Length: 412
Ligand code: ADP
Ligand code: ASP
Ligand code: MG
Image (cartoon, rainbow, N blue to C red; front, top):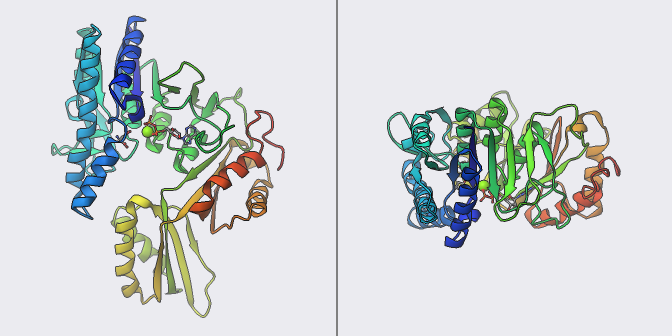
């Protein structure tokens, strides 16, 4: 019998009625003749509530304790989902990440999966059970509980699908699939039927939170085909897979935006070899992933360095830079949490000049100032003020005519 892995996100299990709805969908899949392994997130809002309580008690909580706390969210939902399935007459068993054998490294709060053992899952499937696994969590070789970063249940699902060589990995969420922009911001965003791993990686890396970026990397590396669908309707659905000849090669296929970044600037740094190395080594040692970096042209041997980083690393980044400013003999530093990054993504961009120019024109026509720019072969990102983010996304979606499937090259 084939195996299907299904993942249900927090909004899909936000209350008892929704949990019952998910239980019915799971049973229907099993009855159709496949083994079912389900990965579930914490009930909607739980992870945020736990984080809020933690920070109220301690501004810089220990990462190990944070993981101990956050992992409880998913433990609640697996047990409740099993109870709902049992009440509908089917046999299910809940398992934590540690019970399954999802082994991670020890970088608490953003741990990476290093090994997955599926023996326990296979045993339970052979007994005819539906297996419900807690997403987002793992365990180190030393038996400490870890979590995989926000949105990490997606990665759990894909890792299990890879290990079990599942027929399908279905990610159920609160929208119909992957759209040309966040459907909550752009009302006429278009559902994309197929997206390549390459484009989905750029979309998730630039803030499209429908999937965790690491889950897409994992899927690409292990050739797991992902289907993103709605928990609440049978409409739509997006398949994410390797790019092939038949796939639409859109010049611009989507707009992503990210409000969860912050910016740090170091002013008046001596412009000599080793300075950038010192700054970014200190940040790397503090486990901070830096995103866009700009170093100004130096004047009289002095320059400014700006970079963006995830908002969740802001406190740690600020501390690191404040200490470093003294050592580097820099003039000072500035910190800005009210920024946003908007990005254009498209596999066809690499062979079409003029896209960046058009993007900047659209932003200029809307009086939106660009603070920083970064590009890759299939992406252009602009850092702007947070208050302009929604307007920028809508203007770019309109300007590149993304609501029409064949309007992608117009405007460029
Ligand atoms: P879940 O709780 O199911 O994991 P998430 O909140 O993590 O759900 O992800 C789903 C959300 O992603 C949607 O509600 C939507 O607002 C947001 N989103 C952002 N960009 C896109 C996009 N391009 N296509 C679909 N959803 C998007
Ligand atoms: N509960 C975790 C979060 O809110 C993991 C997930 O939902 O995927 O980020
Ligand atoms: Mg999610």
